Length: 278
Length: 113
View 1 (cartoon, rainbow over the protein chains, first blue to last red):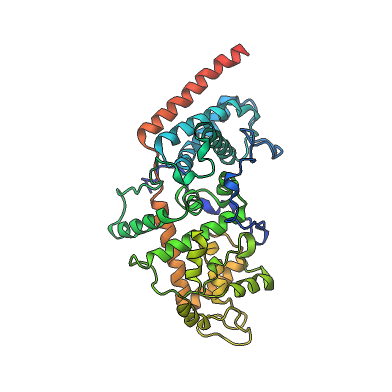
View 2: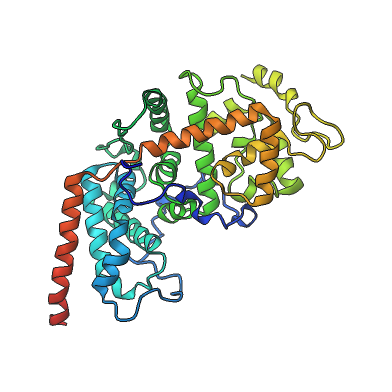
């Protein structure tokens, strides 16, 4: 994968794989009230709600050393996430710069663990502050932000011909998703964040990320069928979009979960679409 | 829509009795298609424990339609990954310069403090 150029190995999604489904926290119904835009969630620039774990800072390391060792390797990821959040290259670059500045000033307070999570927290808070500062009227309706670029920019160089059509269909489907679903797909599947990292960036529970991600992929999959891809008339059991947020979609959810599935009925593709279009 | 749903639904028992096989898959003690569909994306993300992984893998081996679903999801995810944007060269250079400026500035702050 010489073109990847990110320094991040594939399969990073699985970093949090030791979190088994059974312990996924229950999540509220996400679509009713979106906590993404809750103005009361006014955190300081650097999240300090987590007590500092054992430091990974090495003896004699200066702030510059820590910055070089732990921050610089994350700049690419920061930029991709910034692009997903702003959907605009100029804004993304500004956001990364401002975040780097804040990170640099706070480097002495950084315990050295989970640099990506730390930086993404800074990025997220910086973006919120920028957003509020510059366009407070858009705080609750990011959909009407005027300037927008597709977050995904297919790199055709190494793409095989047979992938190109499929990728175009997938990208087109992605662009049709509602914002809160699309952003999760962008952060996890396009940008390569873990579920947990995406949850932190979006400030939603882990279970909400999983639910949105799976429902979004399901919709992409459904949209591929009329585009000539996908399995056609599905072996549709329909439970994918039963609305069970969070840990509900587990094999361990027991009789209660199964009953809920049954209550919503089986092959519900039409229902699914209506649900998500709200 | 509802007519189609009503037609499709009976083919997929939501809670197949454990005592009898529902057909090509979901036999006694095995994972049902409903369960498999719930877990299929966790499976492709490698986000479920070994036991659940083994159970769904067994189901997929017995159930071509569910296996096709899995393949489609894998293709979608691979496609999205191919769309990962790369930092443009000029942006990367500006950010690098910015970091160098930060470090240069830090020495002054230290002196002033």
